[in-house]
Amino acid sequence: MIEQPCPIKRVTPDDGLHYWFGYYDKRPWNAAGDKLLVHRTNFVDRFPEPADVAEVGWVDPTAKKPAFHKLGTTRAWNWQQGAQLRWWTDVDGFEGVMFSDRDAKGRAITKIIDLEGDEVHRVPYPLVAVSPDGRTGLAISFGRLTRLKREYGLPGEADPNPGDPSPRDDGVYSVDVGTGERTLLIDMFKLDRTVAPGEESPAAGKLHQHINHVMYNPSGTRFCFMHRFARADGIQHSRLFTMPSAGGEPRLLFEGMCSHYDWKSDKQILAWAGKRSLLGGGSGSGSPVKAVMSLARRALKPAYYALGKPRILMNKIMKDSYLLIPDAEDAPILAFARGELTTDGHCTYNRGGAEPARWVLTDGYPDMKIRQPLFLWDTKADQGHEIGRYPTPKELDGEIRVDLHPRFNADATKVCIDSAMSGKRGVYVVDVAGVTAAPAPEPKPTPQTAKS
Image (tube, rainbow, N blue to C red; front, side, top):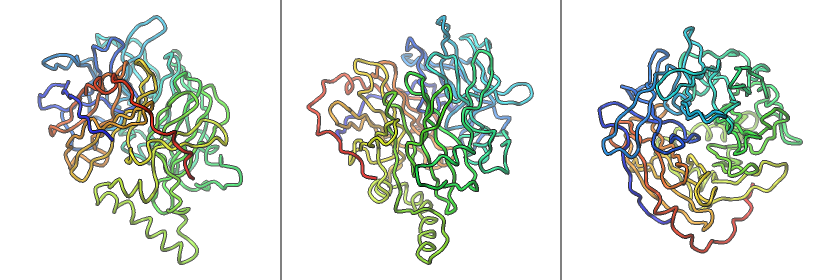
């Protein structure tokens, strides 16, 4: 790993308020690159309540004196993913801003506004992903998330099926952006019972499940998502699925621990994942050996957090790592940057620039000195660059944490991050052109197939 710090600039005002963009799967820059979307609030030290308002607007990332240009407000947001804020362009080239909000009855919806802040369209559901052509969105139950994984939910949203572990009428929906028509593509009852040949359902129809992290592939023909539940021993179990965007059969790609991911191409996904065979099945019943393993599993998570989330525990002991997972049946899974990128992070490929999908951008959770690392991985040279390491307040952790959530601009010369390095939430731009524009050195040997 080459240590190569890159120039960094705060692009939001230092006015005592708090700014952030949101998740790593959306690009905050507009097409011209002269506007960058952000949220703004006057508090940062607690989870939002249903009536709490966040402002949405943009800043000029090139301005010498940052200024916030307010476009509107939202009451449907959280710290991790904001209000699903994004740029939206129609077939005629109109550029607007899309984000989640609530209607007059308090129901979560999606708004599209113009750059004057005027509403031009609304969709009656909050969208988590939008197809490349802007015509179709994907939606999930935020009430389910609010109950089972609050940091990704929307305060005040109720689970329509609180007593059902795997409801037949809740899952991933396709939504026509123009008409607002919603179609259930896959439900949790079917996902619960979709298993590898010869396997039994790991949730057994009894453990309460949810869906999160929905993402279209680059062409919009398929999408991936996470099917998750807490095991009887408290360990989170993750199942990575894909399926056709128009509907069809789900394909189970990986099961065990799966965290953050991005599509490398229409046929391959990069993910931080691990089989976690050391943790067993999680039933915690039966023999004395199983009882001891259950106690050990229950103690693992608090110990991990108490030690400052040491990367050696997950990477060296649990064998978690980055993996290239094909969207295909019975295809080999490949190791990626093994021994180099050794911490879970929010990974994305560059979509533009001279060589699309050459660069992987990712970050890491705070180290023992409470600093968050930022990395670029050159897939052509098979070489990593640590381009920054930034302090973060210890008190901003858990569901109010400030992850870097790095995002590329259009040509992979700049990176946008959220950070509280100054003690307040802010948005920063890192100039990475000195790395991504440099000629590639000779590549290392091809990575080997990952061991299960």
